[in-house]
Amino acid sequence: MSSTNFPPLKNDLILRVCRGESVERVPIWIMRQAGRYLPEYKVISSEHSFFEVCRTPSLACEVTLQPVRRFDLDAAIIFSDILVIPQALGMQVEMIANEGPCFPQPLKTPEDLNTKIDRTRKASEELKYVYEAITLTRHTLDGQCPLIGFAGAPWTLMSYMIEGKASTTMSKAKRWLYSYENESHDLLTVLANFTIDHLVEQIAAGAQIVQLFESHCACLTPDLFNRFSLPYLCQIAKGVREKLVQRGIPSVPFILFAKDAHFGLHDLAKSGLFDVVSLDWTITPSTIRSLRNENSTLTLQGNLDPCALYSSKANLEKFVREMLEIFGTQQYIANLGHGIYPDMSVDNVQWFIDAMFSWLSPSFLM
Ligand code: CP3
Image (cartoon, rainbow, N blue to C red; front, side, top):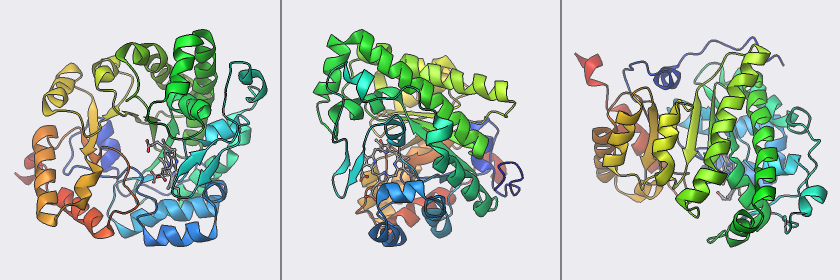
């Protein structure tokens, strides 16, 4: 299947917002919009393991399309996982039902960097299945809305590779930052370079936007963030753009989601490297206003508390109105402040989307 002759796009709202153009309505998509809260996803996941779905382009395509068939969303996000990169580098990753990811042999000491990771591996060879899924999905979407590709940022991947599973303290991974500084930078550099290639290949295969997830900032001090996260986020944004130029591929909007990195948001906004900065639900209205002042071309995304989806229709409408009062209707993409949870109701997701649709930009109403 060709990654060039894609069907024309019928809804480019989110792309226009990312470019800073004025729009008639706020675009909306939902982090983890494909997943276990959808009955049709549960059917597929009862028959196939998580990574089998990721590795089978027809299944990944089907699961990516499920939420955009059901809801009026302005973007689809390819069904995959951030942990395909550690897998591609040679580590074993299992997805345990109701628990999450598990690395049976996590990195324990810096010597493991020479034995448990194969630096010679290439994204273009190891992760072909992601790129095939993207090309197939982009054709099958038939231009309904843009397709988002994604990757996990280096610190988030490093913390999983060392902790081996979810952790509240991240103390094993943070031990590396404090006691093996050079080796930490070595690992983060390997991950950043692999991530650049993974994002470029996704764009070459048809992804029309990319989002980088730095999900594990809550455990970092501002200083650790500045040394072990921020430089790699910037390196990836620059590296992707440079490689696209080298390969003659047009650039696409870049979204950064650094969850709980409130101390780093101003630097991220000021860097000018990201078209969109996605915010979690802890960010105050005054921070949002100051980010807007910091960089007038920046689009913001977020930030409804996912748990607000447990509330009544009337309350959800109130929360949506409050979000729009804070963010405005321009240079803004409505989303949750993190992924949707499996016990959330599809009706409440529908109410959230309906509430967003009822707000049109005042300038377009005149
Ligand atoms: O719809 C989408 O958002 C696209 C697919 C997507 C998945 N994971 C599928 C998935 C995306 C964008 C991700 C990103 C991801 N994966 C992140 C970054 C975002 C974030 O949540 O902070 C992280 C940290 C991971 C690692 C990961 N994968 C965890 C922690 C878990 C377990 C938590 C959970 O939701 O169960 C996964 C599993 C996972 N990834 C599921 C899905 C749909 C659930 C697996 C299942 O079907 O049992």
